[in-house]
Image (cartoon, rainbow, N blue to C red; front, top):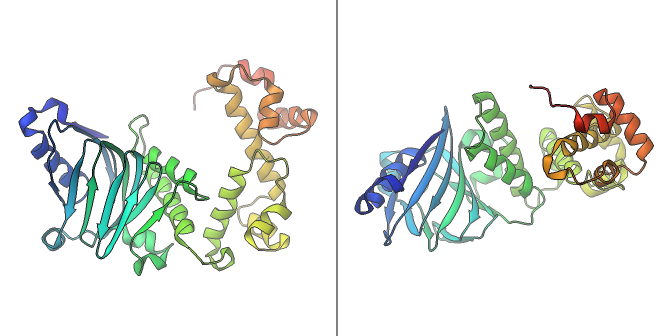
Length: 313
């Protein structure tokens, strides 16, 4: 992780300093409309062809024009999450407004303009075209997409972007590659549009099923029938999908609920919650069954687990 901040630079040099840092960290672009009292901060990391960055800055514009494209071709998509503030994207004849918690996918091979009219915070992932195109070939003809804040997989996509771009955790190259791979799957699922789940590649269908089940772990009504109906497949097909990951639906559901409870019991922010409250919150409706299953999985009763010092991994 490499950090840059305009705070350490003379006020008269901050904007030109930012221009150099942005070009080096993300894409070959120019910056325009320098405001008064400009300030900015970047945290960036790189793993081979993968680049990730977190930005905080006051209002200005980023421009990638034909000269930039010719001088430094970029065979990448830019996946950007707005954490705070608003912006306006333009690419070709299309324009796009981005609100907080929304995600945009921009084609780095083509010219674009991004205007920040107010202070913003962003998380950005620069992903090779081949990596995303393999999962979402429809993006080749529809190069820019927006994932709104209420879409089914946006929470998971946001979490992946924050992990990849945050400075609170050191990532290995293998961890970054796995997170980026999962992010591409989530983007593919979100941008599939009218493509029915049954027409998705099998691995994407499995990602969609798991993502939906993770979101519904708290739902005591979560069942093979409910999930199959949600995706328009038969219950038999659902069970066959879970077999591909070496799990039954019931076993996967139990283990993931138990894992969620184990983390909640160790979470200092949840010390006021009772064990039964945590169990019910994560979809268990039989406390005796929860206690037996928890002890079988973790070798300790929930109360012991809560007070036992966490072992280093």
